[in-house]
Length: 333
Image (cartoon, rainbow, N blue to C red; front, top):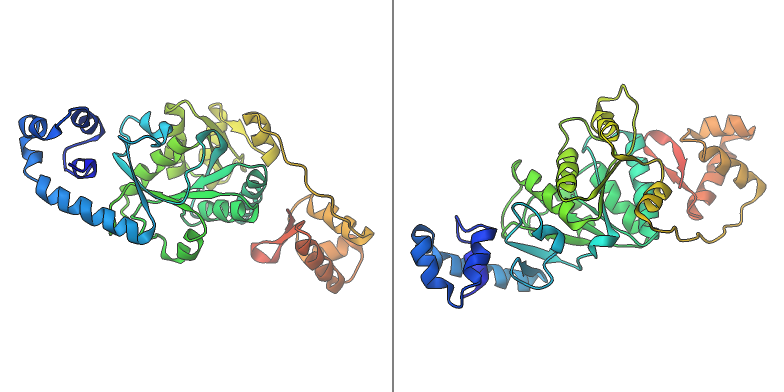
């Protein structure tokens, strides 16, 4: 009997599944202990065959709770998934961090997330998030820019990428879901998704999150699993930062840079290659490191024409030291 068929049976959760699979022949035990579930076995076996055929066609691996290689962090969840659909390589738990936050993130949070993720990726960490709009998207993009790996945990099946505009991004990263093929997104699926994010990582970093944010659900799961929770402080008057600020009040480690994360978790930063800058570029870069700014404000501060500042910004972008931000602003990388 295919263990996946048992996993797909309604009413057979992770505990019952492992108990049945511990039997040399689980079928008699299934019929005796769970007769109502057993009536659906033939249908579950057909579904299991379809799932495996679809997985093979898409290059997806179905990894069961009963198999060696199933993520250890997920086995410690009160209600672990019975199986996972995995496209790509799972990270080592000790070298993975989650970056999560609101879908309706502020420009500063989007910029900070991308920079933080890129630098953590450059340091050799895998960045995990939920492939949602806002903070999640920037976390994945930053990790890819850093040349490292990133993993997205979905609240839908792997053949139903949500949101649909992230399909191209999804092709560049590892994907994980617990939902059978063809399952679309539903509001109740995302809290379930969040527990998997927490289980796969060593630490959860909350960038910007209101008090009702799903990011706080991820943080709560992390705490229940004994994982580290860190948070990026925001302005006390910003509703979007209230959840993250309260996490810090409750003991979450405050994050002001990637260095804070690496130091707190005991990792070392990889030295960056030296980049030669002209005196003009050095002056502009120094201003950008003080905070985001518009080109005209930078031109006024430097006492040079705006056209020259735009040229210098392009050079700094090519050297990986500056980035264009929403609203026409620029910031340091």
